[in-house]
Length: 310
Image (cartoon, rainbow, N blue to C red; front, top):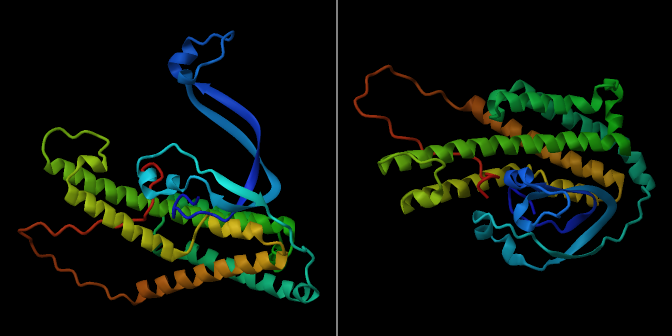
């Protein structure tokens, strides 16, 4: 399940457990006895280390669909989704001859899209709406795949199976970074709204403030904020999970390059349109006049998803 949109994938990856680490609570660890196995109450958490198997499966159905409901995420339900799956039948992985001829041309297009998006983010930080640390991380991620490569031959990185995936990883970092930026915006706007509502109630301020602690009218504002942020996030079409799950399911390398190229072209067009709108937006004239009444508070805006909240 995608953490940000809640949508369910139709294809899954098989993971093999290679290590189990049973971590005790602080009190249980202080009084632990190696001769006795820990009880369930002594366990703080169980950490599983897994390794992906070269096997994909089709998700036939979810056995407990009620666990995927938004209400369950609001309650932070510990229930995992249980799915019935079947092995995904491999397709013929041989590249057709006509696609072999077009692959180099497609790789040049992909490289051009990649570089244009990189330049847009690096030269227009005021439009990306990302914090400075996220911009630095994004710059490092963009540069990493071709640091040891001649720029004239950089497009060949898309042609190689081995070098293609680091580029796909860099693009996924972009998606996750933009998502985190929206999360931070939502957290700030949401917290500001909840703190303001709690202060109006009077009395000592108790942190953290939960949605259940404020008036129903404020809850509606929070819900409307999250719904609007959800629509805003989905409109970006930068899903860091499902698009890359689909990328993994493609059997032909030509199809993978084409799919990633379409993702990059879509983001270039979106960012370029946003940049043009910012440039054409008329500036408001400012007058230094004294005011006797406080300015009306702007309705908080932000991205949709808060990992700690859901």
